[in-house]
Image (tube, rainbow, N blue to C red; front, side, top):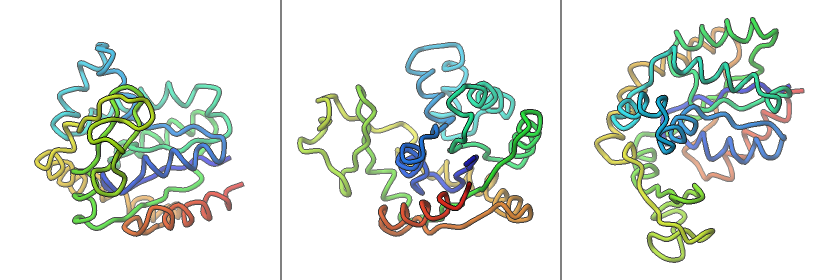
Length: 217
């Protein structure tokens, strides 16, 4: 089983790498951020509750995040492993996850810390554009669409997430420093942590992640 957590600051590439690796190994990529954004788009009560937190670049309450993860891990496709992206983000959440997995009779295989410099993060996030229709991700510099503002895959309109605006990016990084960085040492103390340089080219980071996951049997 490959029960993996991707840990790192926003913009480190956790989601992008997780999608590719989850596809390769046939396990789900579980992103609390994606789940909440889907709920917001659908206008559900959960979405309405989470909207103010996400738009301001803040974390949703622990109880809400854990409830989302509990329901998702109980689905059949997570039976052989998963990549958690965006959870846990605080030590209390990590403790709650540890307790949840113990109840389920399982545990984490590895926590991978994707590390990237702040200047790289700001460039990545501020240039990110997402398709309204299919969700495909582009970048104004690194991966621009053929037609500005238009998705190559489906022709949908591209948009910038509110939390990718410069002010929200700074807020997200501050929240990360205040609440999430402590997790690095917390998981290192449990001998679960591996560090990967996510400030280099995407394909090189992928190779390093692939090497780690291939060892988890």
